[in-house]
Length: 202
Image 1: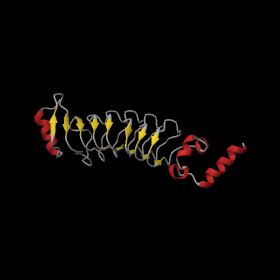
Image 2: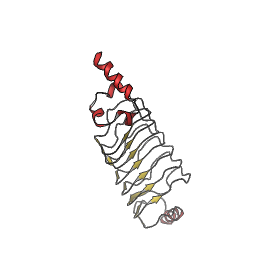
Image 3: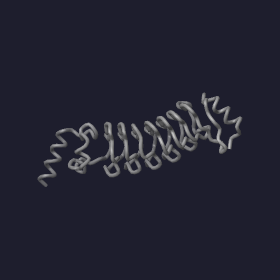
Image 4: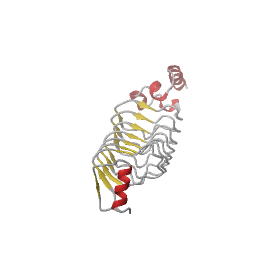
């Protein structure tokens, strides 16, 4: 565990103010923490609660160890070298973005969020994704091959292009009644029409 002096030096280095050092060496921050685009390979401080945004994106992180357990605003860990969301916050008050990584599972992500962005990873399924999304949901450019485990509710737009979803599997699904397959998945109107005809006449 780092000493109090070491923790304060790290906070000063990253312009982190309005914080309290807890007995376990973690810190609570009243405000936002922006440590993005700094070439970090690991988090320099252990965070506990951050009242506003936490942004550790555009670094070279391979783990989220040290991330806060609770974030009152948005959480960004996009554009790193992550393969897992282990140690990500349990509670996020606003948006959650883990896009542009090498993540293979959404295990450990929060159960509810506003906008959710997991685009450009290596996901084959959306198992463990948030069940309630109050904003948009973006899972473009993965390797997703099933609509099983999709969120129970998405209030905003749904983006699932450049995956491995088979049109025949979803064209008559309950999911297709709630989302535009052209906008959400990138299928053309002609593809949708011909697939429906094929299924009906087979």
